[in-house]
Image 1: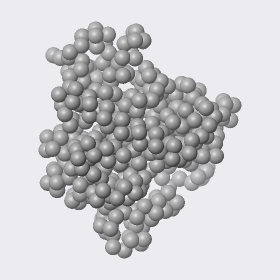
Image 2 (image 1 turned 90 degrees about the horizontal axis):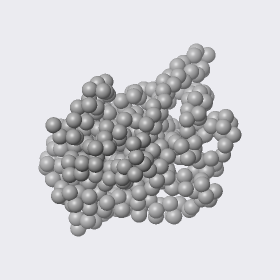
Image 3 (image 1 turned 60 degrees about the vertical axis):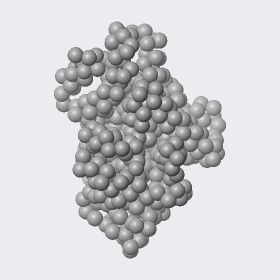
Image 4 (image 1 turned 180 degrees about the vertical axis):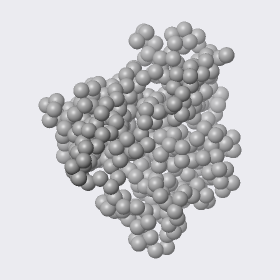
Length: 443
Ligand code: GLU
């Protein structure tokens, strides 16, 4: 049995109840065959066994009181996965689906994503099964304060720097930061995605969506094509989707769909970003509202954005949302590029189908790295006690996305798998972390 297969089997045996984590490990390790099969140091030093095992997992009780005076208890966690190249860095997901498998898969992906940014940040992820949906501001604050009261013991600007993810936006980061500062008596860049009045970075909010479109633009450019005039199907209606849609419009392309947990919108004239922002960010309402703003648009219950004929597909909602049948529909419709704004939105089966049928597929760890890259820029600004203008941060973001594209493209070419950006991203992300781990000895 090859070294890679041996480690995949061990991971499956050790973590039988963690399907998402196994999925992420399988995808990454499969691409690393090209690297580890030709260099015995990796096996000798048990590099793969070490990289699939989190350095530390913290799991804790989060008690809080709801508006009816009832005591609620959630489970909080932080997976500090790998600090070989810098402090743990990664978001906090607040969603009822959160469990250890999901946080471990996200933390594992984050190691390679963060490495690809070229910035000194390790991989981590955390969250809770708390559902912010439908909760009052006071309830959200009570949860966030209780969550941070425990988490603050394990994080710090040079140790572990959490951020937003699904369910964790500016409001939640604000409450968490306030509690951290109060307990630890430290004004430091311990969280990113902060408000602009207390150390946040301009362009952080937009960064993931903008970065996604920048990398697609660069990919098309490298193929002698252009993003101008392209149509796009976007899923999701959160922070990533909103700013991807906005950047598409700014660059002369057009997003015609978006979706939320219950339905989706098709707007042939192009999704109206202002309407979307008002519905999702101000009213915190459902997409059913969209047709009130745009009578020509259609609202449908359920799922369906991947059935629309478009040039680009940008899944920006959540893991495993683009399935094999969706991949078949995209291929049949002549879609050129699928780039992941969310983390692991495409199943393994769907990914392979897209790649086998000539669609350029850019995995999330490269395509959505603009968010965490800009978080690292926020950390830099906090350390310098300085802030860059929007244009400065945006220019750095664009430069980072362009260099990620060429990095993964070059890695794919070097290993003889041209256009396989999954392999290119995994190899390029892995090599830097592995080098650092080898240099550090058996730790
Ligand atoms: N949650 C985002 C991600 O998946 C951002 C993490 C961060 O900014 O630290 O990469």
